Amino acid sequence: MVLPRSLFEPPTLGRPLKALALALACAWFTLGETGCQYDVLQPEGEGGSACDSTAAVSYAQDIAPLLDLRCNGCHSGGAPSAALDLATHETVALYATAGILDQRVSLPESDPLFMPKNGAPLDECDLGKLQRWTDNGAPNN
Image 1 (cartoon, rainbow, N blue to C red):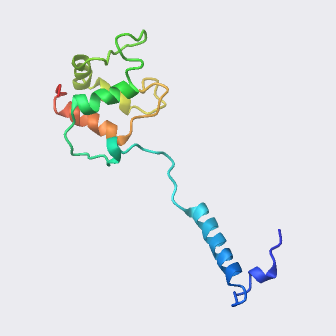
Image 2 (image 1 turned 90 degrees about the vertical axis):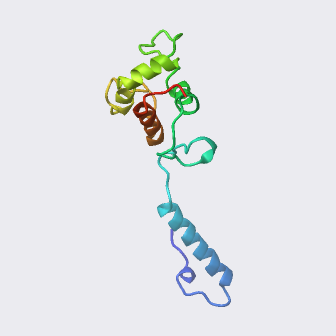
Image 3 (image 1 turned 180 degrees about the vertical axis):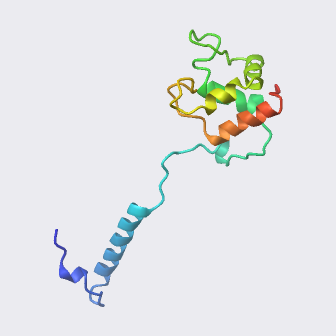
């Protein structure tokens, strides 16, 4: 494609709209090529707030919903393939304090024991919540 020579000449008062259109086209192309990109969309927690790595973690408010969303499809009492039953606080607390939960969700995705199986890894915020809850003794709060 050959661009007309007039596009490369400095704008004059007779061509302000062409000059503006060219400037906008160049800006649009530049931003499209080098602008911000988000390769992975990470949830920022409920209500759109950022993850607070120092906030207290509750089993009922943080851990149970995370397990329901990411784990209990396979790891609940009714699931036939449930090697670990994560449906109740008692069993979750047992596996958490034994280090089993943290170990399985922290493995590389290439490891056959990685969890959630065939799913995306937990994000840093969820891993941090699970770790803080476990470090606090996995309370039923």
